[in-house]
Structures are given as structure tokens and as C-alpha cells.
Image 1 (tube, rainbow, N blue to C red):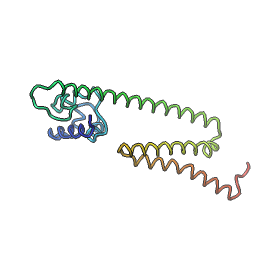
Image 2: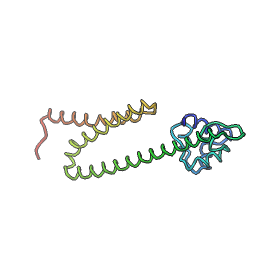
Image 3: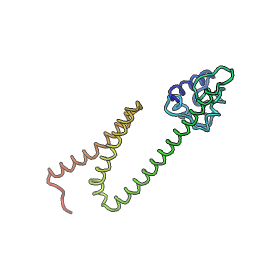
Image 4: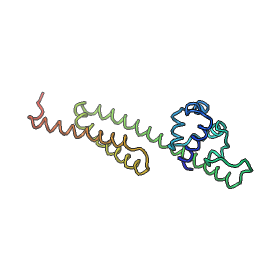
Length: 190
């Protein structure tokens, strides 16, 4: 199923009815940002939203999934099978998104817990000057790799790349501060 074609189809039907994205979103009990994402081809509606979306736009689910209006004659079996395949692939896609979100949540919680233990283990000064640069170095490298992947997928990558570069600047600044401190005589004992 082509997300761009799907989005253009929804946008055209919505505009035919003279509705804004917010009005369509209200009819479906979703946000206008969700409708915007669908229309820009950045995602698909939840599988439970397909029938209400088709009803609101006054098309069949088959027409919605194929992103084209079918003649009002009898629907061919191969068209129905194609629509069913599209629904199944959409369900698989949504499961993948849910798994990805769960993994991101687990990794985030684990990282926070590890950071708490690391800060507890080290004094805060040592954490800022030793632990944080390594953490920001890893985050910066990961964000740059993600931005390269997003660019290859022809998705927006500029924000991810900028955040990656900024994250890499922190360890560089810390190293420069430490070099300056040692050039001026090194740390002073308490």
C-alpha cells in the first residue's frame, strides 16, 4: 500500500466535502496532527479507524485501501483480496510500530536507571567531566547514524542530524575546558 497515494486520496475526499483536517479528525475522534500525517504519507490510520474513516468520507473500505474510487458495479474478487492484503499489511506495520515503541520505552527506562546508578557511584563533578562526555558521544554518534538512515529512506533528517552534531559538541567542549585548565596550571587541590 502506497502511503503517499493513500494520503492524497484522503486529502482529495476531505477537500471535496469542504472539511478541514480538524473537522475530519473530530468526526474520527483523532487529532488533526494524525490526519495531517496520513495526508502527507507519513503513516496510516489505526486499523480500527479504517471503517469510520471510510464511512466519514463516504467510500468503501476497499476503495479507501486501494486509494481510488471503484465503479458502483460489483466488486471483483481479486480487488477484494487485494484490499484484504492491504489491511493485513497495515496490521503488520502497526504491530511493528508498537514493538518499536515498546523497545524505545524499555531502552529509555533502562538508560535512566543506569544513569542514576552511575551518578550515585561517581561524584557529580566526575560524572559531568568523565561520564557525560562519553554518554553524549554515544548519543551523538547514534543520532548521526539515525539521520543517515532517515536520509536514505527519504525522510526528514535535518533535526536528527543537528541534534547529533550538538551532542558531539559537548565532549569536545569538555575536552577544550580541561585542556585550558591544564594549560593554566591544572586543577587546584582542596
